[in-house]
Image 1 (cartoon, rainbow, N blue to C red):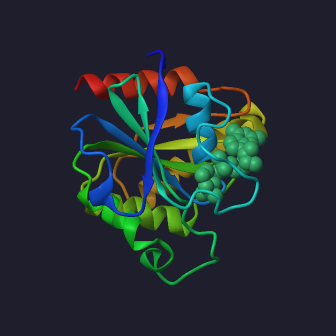
Image 2 (image 1 turned 90 degrees about the vertical axis):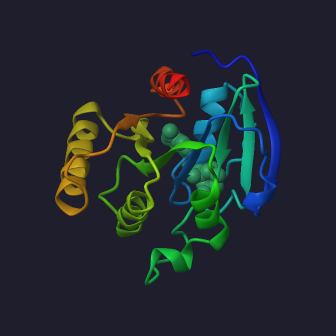
Image 3 (image 1 turned 135 degrees about the vertical axis):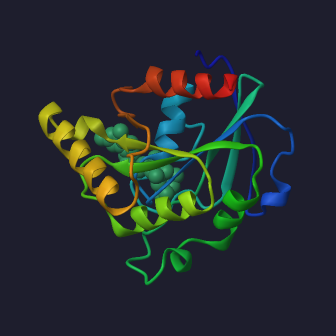
Length: 198
Ligand code: GTP
Ligand code: MG
């Protein structure tokens, strides 16, 4: 799929004020600094459609971007930069959980994880929470440029193994990206294109 048009629509913290067109929607979520906003810019070939920063906590709101006049990409704030917390819910602002619980247009979430890191408790808890709430999701391993191919493959396999042991009988669908090299761009767009057809 080609992205011919990408436009910012609205930011807010209230899911009831998000655009109400009944078109497919995909949301990027994950720890702060994992590269959610950068991935939106890569997919849309726009340098600063979504605001990015080297400092965690840049994205603070629910941001809707309309693609090709027919589906939404949503950039969300990250979780987990306010240090370790006892429960995911505490660090994870209520408006984000509201978003996931109430957003009927959401076709799939994409949980972004940094390919360099071992599975983090907060990501595991969040994926479990998505599962319990029957919210479909895929994993995106980001920053693939930071590892050599062998290390990348090893990390991903270990990650999927941990997921299978801890949480799921089958590992969820996953993709691998690098926003600095455009790696995985076609793959992600193709996957979204397939989901749009369903
Ligand atoms: P929050 O909005 O704070 O939750 O962060 P975010 O997940 O939106 O991350 P963002 O896209 O702002 O990127 C964080 C930092 O990581 C920036 O310095 C980016 O340039 C860098 N970054 C993002 N993706 C990649 C990537 O694929 N490769 C490399 N090398 N750096 C990346
Ligand atoms: Mg961001």
